[in-house]
Image (cartoon, rainbow, N blue to C red; front, side, top):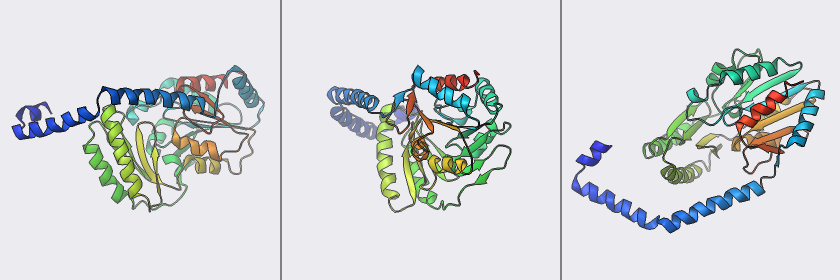
Length: 306
């Protein structure tokens, strides 16, 4: 990039400088300050109207008491942003030994089943948890594997829409340094956590508008996640997957924990008596919230205390 800038013809330099100069004229300190203050107000509003209660000592005590009294228990745990912090790549989100030990101890409890439910592909989840008796739901619900069982596709879906969507995402990837594309079996994710924040904010808004227009007549959904914009088949969501997993099971206690928009489907479709926890203070359908993944692990360790 430096070499290109130094060897660029004078006409190109002037053209690019004019574009940048016009942008700086539009996006001056007043506009920047207004946006900054607006974001602060949005955060305050979302905190005050999240609809969830903080999981305080009293609420946590009731949850633990219900867990210890139950004879059959199920834990539905999102992965990225819940069991581990948000990272840029699958390699960086590999489960650490402390997390593996924690999950292994949980599944060893009497009549306790643990399910890791994630938007990531089944290969990744298999690599992390395949050697443990853990239930796995991959691709937001399209793949399922019960403890000790084999992977199975929950639904047969048409993915011909990828031929239209993938080139569009690639075009915006080229225009956004640091952006990347992860193509999964029934979805495509455009990730921008490594991109320059100001530029990625502009690009993701443009891409979202284009994708919404392109998918208006397709049976797919456009999801805004944590530093990711994802297109997937509409019939695939964590809520449907969670309900399928619960079918036929007689359970006394269910706990579901997640952190982003895709987990809201799970919170919405689970029965009212289920304990639901959101990681973060955003607007949510969950009953409770905790501020960060570290608090999730702390809560799970408390389930081992008795």
